[in-house]
Image: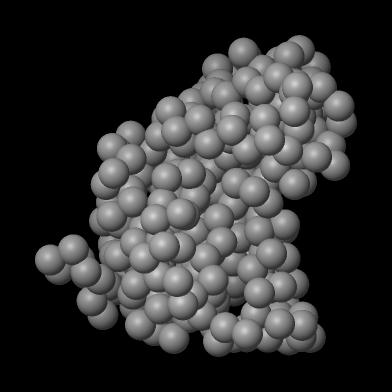
Length: 270
Ligand code: DGL
């Protein structure tokens, strides 16, 4: 069994939607989270660059004693999962795309809509995994480049967020039987997405991969415990700002302490 310390990373806030699940599933494992806010958003970046970031962050998490790493980031899962598994064979590395598709397999029959970043859509990773797991299913992928900047700027619940939701949902309305949130930031927009969908007279079946991704990671660190372990948060951006953002996502009364990490010669340092 790998060490009972789970490393989780994303470009920013979004991966906290997976951390939230890891905490609520109470594995007893310690969780180390890295938000690479120096580079957010990942979505418009070249896929090769995402691979470099994902491998360097995974190495850092391994150095911190994590035997399991969760790429709580779809674009990293789409482009870097295999690279990191080969480069770091001594840790268990999990992505979020396979868990998302497993969850969609339990959803209603019909076309599957995927909302994701431009990079994830261009990688075609969802189309490939869905074709393998749900052969014959029509897949409609929609790139939503405005969503991550909206979430990171704390603009959820605003007219701007609602307007973006309306525009990105339009091509899926009446087409998709279910909708995969193919970016870990998007569950934070769920109230806006639901409001936009209901204004269109659409009751959406939404798939958030977080719960299944957390279950998969926990199963690789052994039997589920009954308590939540320690959570250590870090960011390559501003620690105080990320602490306030994390407080809101995790529902804490006060902002948790956050360690600031820095990129130096392609490596993360504390
Ligand atoms: N939350 C990440 C994802 O799931 C990255 C989003 C971004 O930085 O563009 O793809």
